[in-house]
Picture 1 (cartoon, helix red, strand yellow):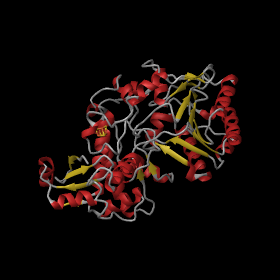
Picture 2: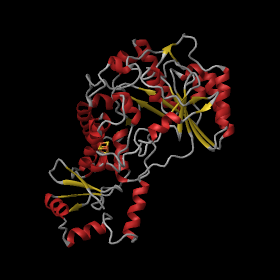
Picture 3: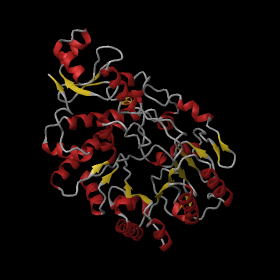
Picture 4: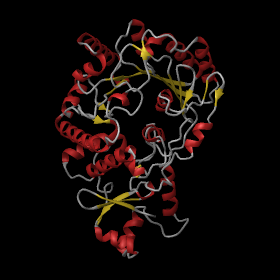
Length: 465
Ligand code: SF4
């Protein structure tokens, strides 16, 4: 099977095949491979490790085909819905990624007709299990809508889960009652340090204390159902240990590093383009700080996206993250319903439409779905035939994000290596393999924690002599 290769920091070469199999070898193997002069030892190694077969139809051939197919994401029924019952918000964060309006602004909420039409539409879905995410604005400002949708979904579906993306700024007794249910998860924003949180989000000591108290309360009620996300300004990146301390202090063990998104209001105020090299260097610094921290801490931490990429390298089937799939078809297994009842394929597509970049609406809850716009996009939503990706050893683990490409460049056909998506993923997969092959015990401890392994077995990190 074809092998793609890339030089590792150690000087060795990493070889990967299309099904996600990989090994390291030296320059002499590459020369023999390219010249068609593989020796018996090479052939035996490739066959034994599933990178080669003797003839079409034999066990090695079919096993490779099976592993290759397992690497592809097959979208299921529509079973994940993001609802935006209001654009109103009680904060005005400087790097707000969504299109929010003031808390008192009229005309930016679902009306009764939209609520009823949404419930009717949910009722028409064929799935028996559903995940519903409430976004905004601040969705807790429309607790009445959240309650109506949740009550309906609990009756209608065999299994229903709810995520509330809330700033946790003002939560009353009825709000806490809503959030305390076992089927309801809280996703909030917690900036890298409390100082930054105050500067960019809350704006005052009183409001910061109120948020901190609410976060403590949420963690006390349901620690396993709370997640928090920081946002990083690429020009003022904090010391990683300060961020780890902030999150550990609140009992949060998973930190998802995200630079200010090239979306919504945020892109107007912060540098969000051509940040790949700076960001990759920071991610590396951060992950290495976590390795050091985990070497002595009894409560280890992880960087969410690095761990996700690590798991994608080691196993197929890690397709739960919407930003990293291949193919990454939009408008099929999940949808967004905006404050005016419009359907969008993703939350980012909603923001782009609001900024007037491109209209990616797919109809609305009153008149029905019209997928014609995204069908055009979906014809390009896989990396298998991409002229750059076909040469890249990371192709089996990587994916595509056409909405991000559209947002940054206004087009989806830029040579892949010129995109922010590619540069970031090239950096993160380089780091994944560097750590996987590291002999440093501290590194191996963290890799095992993040990947769910007992130890890094030699068969996992093969080297062909
Ligand atoms: S997007 Fe970049 S890193 Fe990902 S497979 Fe394509 S070339 Fe490789």
